[in-house]
Image (tube, rainbow, N blue to C red):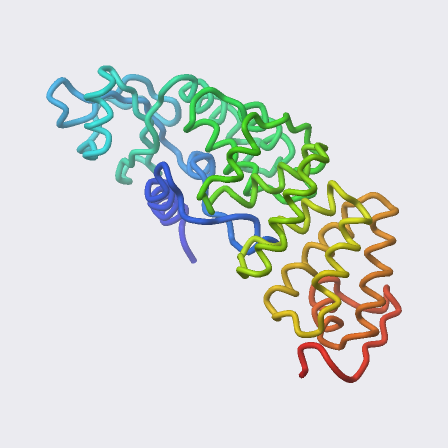
Length: 321
């Protein structure tokens, strides 16, 4: 079983590898397992230091110890990327961390703008967040979704992305500036959470976009169909459920992986949506399960027992063909 030191090394490697353009990850219901975030790393570590590059740029000089015993010397050569950043911004501060006095130091992130203040706030909440307080963590980073610094905005989005949907739905989320523009970016890493935020925005002008994007996503077999379906139901309620059922789930020849993602979105909303939407999902699932044994099997996997829907699957059609 991995130790905390192993976790720190793995997490740090993942965070550093993500850089400015992390690989695609999102909540499990829309196709991915979340990558660890910079915050996950800080919650797992014991020593954290703010440092700057030496005058020659060959080493780090500690400036402030944020966690653990006072640090006076750091055995870590700055990365080429950090040296370049320091040339552009003399006096640049960098956040470093290690797990215990004998672990290797790792570069975590450069501290530009308000990032240093945010990191201090994260560390002050380390004990609380370690013990599990997802609502508070989401609320903290929701306030930074419109931060002026791109790195902080991206971190806030990744923190939203790692949260479960029920927590997001209960949170007070701001209207994200430029969300419609950002949804058009070729950024699969953050596209799913941006889709969900569009659904949670309460802005019904996103309904045509989500409807069209879902159709294109089905045609192209995109991995984040669940996000489109979830967001569409969030904004369009029972009409969204009916659209998904009539256009896609009523087709017994719909590809297995596409059906699973769409049914998973229905199951998610069945647990969190208003009563009227939940009732419509229940009726829809029961009807489709009676008509199509392939759908019935998907429903059983995503919803659990079909007894709650009084579903009696037929013997033909669907995935069994």
